[in-house]
Image 1 (cartoon, rainbow, N blue to C red):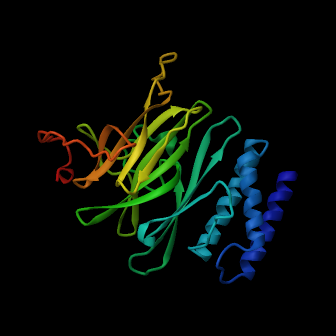
Image 2: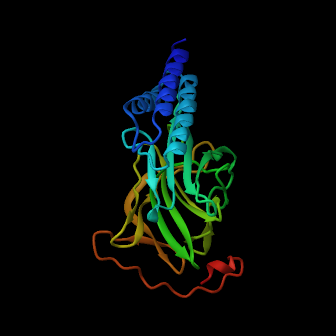
Image 3: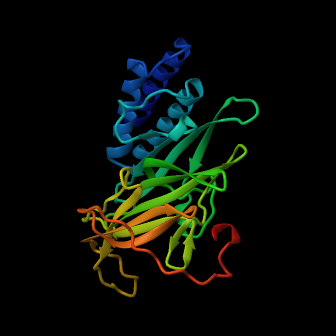
Length: 296
């Protein structure tokens, strides 16, 4: 009864406010209060059923708000990430639903503009993590998304086409956490996630996934002055009961990805305290298995 009354009340206030406000520069006080209450409930509700119900309503209301005003700000709402792509070409709104026992699901919307009609498109992102067996190699879309909460969007060109690199956080459970570096790109109005633009040794990957033990903290950030993604190098950990080893966490050294030759290339063991420059890499033999478009 408590949950039913709370959600009914929240929906009524929101619907009345949404009808009354034709044009908005931001959330009204009533909308903000409703979303704050639902956000708190989906994060810390006493049971999973309450969290899921609150998240369902929260998701519906965020969708309604974005349809009304694609540029509406969610800055006053905790635990939701709202990012503008370089050039204001699209928006990504993402958040996590934590379950009572420590696992997570991810939700989000992509707000873009129809190429022909110039109308706003609001596309829901559906987390399909459980069914993606090889996430670093998979090419995905909004309906089969490797969910994460994004905190940075970068734009890079490859053969005249813009690929957007996404840095994200992905809680897994009480034991492990992940950081994700993904790629988003458009083909007309269609959006795709994942592209083999990350080069680690002789292998090209569609996205990068770094898993480590939850008590550790891994940094993955973009240094604009050096034009590189800098990340903690992970090590340690041990195999338990036949399951693969998960690194314990950062070991005090750093790696980087530098965008050159139209791809992100791994540079290991960099020194971030100096004016470090990447060493000249020996010329590699041509790898016939690699996509031709990536050898440039």
